[in-house]
Length: 276
Image (cartoon, rainbow, N blue to C red):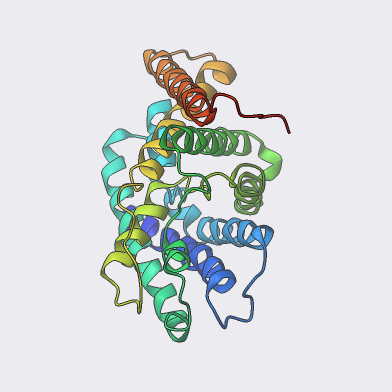
């Protein structure tokens, strides 16, 4: 199996099961309608596990551009293979989203909420604050790529790696997914968002392209930093990329903090009682 086809199939499986669980929970008339965030997080985790089991022996099952770029930045994956992997991941994500659309074909017209329909395909923040949302995606993907390297370094997990990777995804979702819906994967968000834009979904709204850069840029920054952080602290290989991304991450944190402070000041009106 070629790297392109392997990453395509693995990512397609991931998106079918991941976007599928969101559709089941949010679309009207589904038997799983109204299930909670734990179900969504576990569904995404199992989706990743199945994708890794499917193609791990062929490509290593990155099924995520942030992982591919993060490993390349860490020096554990060749940069020459990055474009082919990302191309496969993007095509697989679009195809997986189309499968979900057809699987829930009878439920789109029953669902009035345009945001819920978009939410099946793409992430959106609980509180729209771009600097804070970016930081959330950086942190979540940092933990993902760092965790993957921890898993790969332990021989006792061999054979169980895909399942443990799925548990890592579920843990990130449960613990860190609340602010943004934890894309932590540019292909997982952008591919289905593209599918949402062109599929004939009854009563759909806009695809929210104003937010779409967050689940692309945030995961890439977090993925690269996770890769070079592991090299610096666990391997002892400190590179210029580590220092560059340390500055980038620190700048993102400071900007998000200052933006939050400024927003808090603007909501404080003179003479109001702000005690709880």
